[in-house]
Length: 258
Image (cartoon, rainbow, N blue to C red; front, side):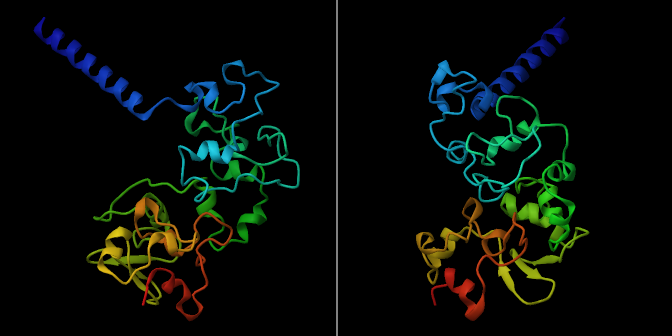
């Protein structure tokens, strides 16, 4: 009897912790009040649902601040018809809800049944990806750059971890990089060595670095840290290209105040 009571108590504790975890994360979009997004609030109907409090990019960005900078473009007219399962909005634009249905509870809130590369090929031709440096692997494996593991022994941001899925010396694709002690990233061609994973605010405190407000908007500091996407384009057709051409060390001088 004592053992049964103990198991029941443990089950109750686990259920309580699960409920707390869900509450701490906040409600999923499909469980949120309609008035968070829809002009009509709780009186929303199929006829007025398209009338939102702002663009989808702004509304979704309230919770997913970096998603639009590290993912498929949103808020543009594709200039051609898309499959019916991936709807454009009332003005013909591709938006967040072209790929995601916030009113379902499927993983990733994704529309349709296709996943991975097949999901992308529903709208894009194979040639679109084959023209890319990595054959489109960086785009088709994940619609948004996100971390999947951390095995490098020091702090790295999620986008950098996603890059290293292909580009580390432990991976099997892409130009390899490795690390020197202390988090110094070394490119395979020995062209540039650079610290990575360092909070930029700490660098500023040492002196010789420009304030964040003065940096080009092309330079991203995921989680406030220096990462791969601080210098390289991630989720774009020009995958791996520098965010700013480094002629005359221009990219370097964006951060270094020398």
